Image (cartoon, rainbow, N blue to C red; front, side):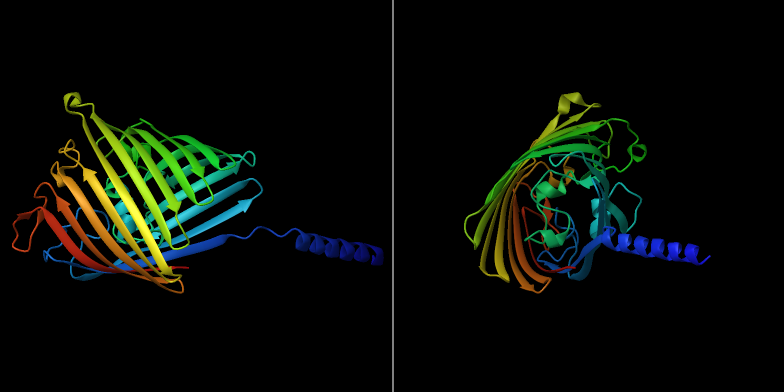
Length: 349
C-alpha cells in the first residue's frame, strides 16, 4: 500500500509539472465604445444620407463592441459582438435588434502562407471600417454607406512576403443566412494586396446577389491605397465602381462610382487633423439609390482627433453639396446642400 501511495504521489507531481510546462493558450479580449452629439444646421432629423449619424440636437450612443479570439495550434476562432444602433444599422438584414453578431469566423492555417477562413466577416471592400474607433472621421462616406458591409461564407488567403491573394464564395451580400435572403445564389469575392513598409494597395472585387431584392446582382471593383509621407503626414485613397443588374428589368441596368481622398496631419502624438474629400456619382443609379435622386455629391469632412489615453475626442464639421435637391433646408424646402457639426467620442479597451 505504501508503494502504491508513493507511485500515485509521483504521478500526480509529474502530471502537475507537465501541466505547468504546457500552458493552455489564453483567450484574448478587446473592445471599443463610441457616442456622439450632432447639430444639423437645417434643424432636421434624418437630413444626412450616410450611415450612423442621422440625428439632430441629440446625444446618441453609437456601439459597444466586444471581441474575443482564441488560437490553438493551426486553428483559431474570432467572435465580434456589437451592441447599439450602429450595430443595428450594420446588420440591417438580421432580426431587428440592437445586439448583433458582427463577425464570427473560424480559421485554419494550412501553412505559414496559406489559410482558410469560414464564417461571417467584415467586407474587404472600401477604406473605412465599421467601428468608429478605427476611423479618423467619425461620420461615414457615401461609398461606405452603399456597401457592402459583410459576407458570410468561406475564403482562402495566400501570403508571400508583402503580397497576398484572397478568393472566396459567400451567401448573398450582407446576409448571415441564405434562408433569410430567400435565395441560394452565391457571391464571389477576391482581393490582391501589397503591403509595404510605408504604404499599401488593395485591388478588391465582389460579384453576386445584392439585396434586399434577390433579383438584383451587383458587381463592384474597388481600390484602396495608403501612404505614409512622413511621421506626421499620411494620405489615403479609395476608388470604387459598382454595376447593378436587375433580372426583372434588364433594360435598365444601373451603375454608381465614388472617388475619395483622405489626408491626416499629426503635429503631436495625441493630436491630429483628418480631412476627407469625396466625389460620389449616382446619376445612373436613380432607382437603386433613390434617396440620392440620381445626383452627384461632393462631401467635405474635417475632423480633429484629440487623444487622452485610450479616449479620443473628435470635433467634426461636414458640408455636402449635391447637383440635385436631395436635402432639406431649415425652411423645409428642398436643398442642394447639407451642413452639420458633430462631437464624437471613442474609447478602446
